[in-house]
Length: 82
Length: 401
Image (tube, each protein chain N blue to C red):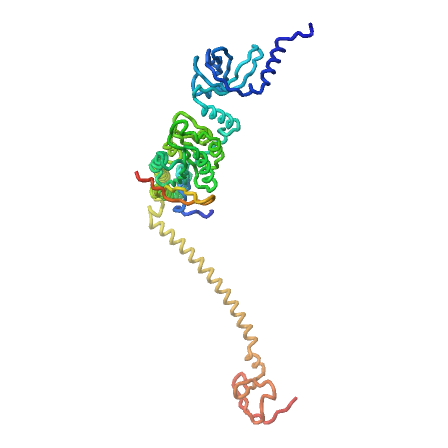
């Protein structure tokens, strides 16, 4: 089996598509009871990871300031207050 | 002269060549009033253009007519751009119209239509050129003015849809002489430094003059050539700027652009919830499907008659132990045999065994075995060891052999 990334280290898209695959696999009915429980458990973890990733990140607005021909820097853009 | 009789077709062909070879007729702009305007079911439009003294027939074929911004009616003053050609069958010359705009729209519109035609012919607006807008962008580039409502609208919508998305804002002028150049620079800079996965380029509406930067050729080209997909948001519901045609997607407003570009977290949450439900449902189904097996299992002997099951197991264990003992015994015997053989061989090599055949060992008082006459002096006490004891004696003489 290839080296698997830890579930927590997956990107959102990776975790979501893995979750989709798990559910499809489970729904196909081809798994034994033990396998099914394993896949289900992983699915729950994946869903938690996705959920966390959607909720914890903070909005970020950076303004690009060109400092010379080829250089630039970011400064926070303070427009976010409503 | 009989020789000089032409056919009608000959004459019309000659006239056609004469007219259509005139360079100023290839691409001509005509101002006039529309009359007898008819649009056929085929989509082609036939009409005449006239001024105070004169009329000319005109035709606008379906493909061109589809791009008309208005439905011309008799009496309209228009500017028509096209070529003069001859329709040989009917022996008429006419204006083949490519572009027609309401007169008074001004020079800007003429420039717009001309540039549009040119870029279109280059293929800059072809659907095949359009890049896909990424569904999960990490960084969204925004090229617009720092002071307008556009940036505010985009931030507000983005925040509502996806609190985690990163917005990279590149402020530029969006009107005035420098606007076009700044927009081009911003698009190129963001491409060069890969600052975003998708770009929103726009402003919050305005008059056609206000929007003009988005009709400039260098801006249109920068958008068409951008490696990062571009969504334009020029803030106008009805009018398309040329930038809109070159963009991969056109949004009517900056808010709509953000809606196109920023994935909606709430949708994902709903999707996630559905997946969770399906996950639970599916595992339940697997468990139910396996229920019969579980029942079968609980009917097994171990649960029904544990004593009998245990008795069976005991017999099996005994059998097993017996076999183990048997094999241990045979191993043991094998080693005993090997041991006896070794002892016999050891015996044969023992010095005691040699002495029993009549040899003895002479040694000095300190135990050193005497192997040569040089080892002893006359008068010294030595010992002779036999199988049954030790003889003490003194050296009286030494004879060399």
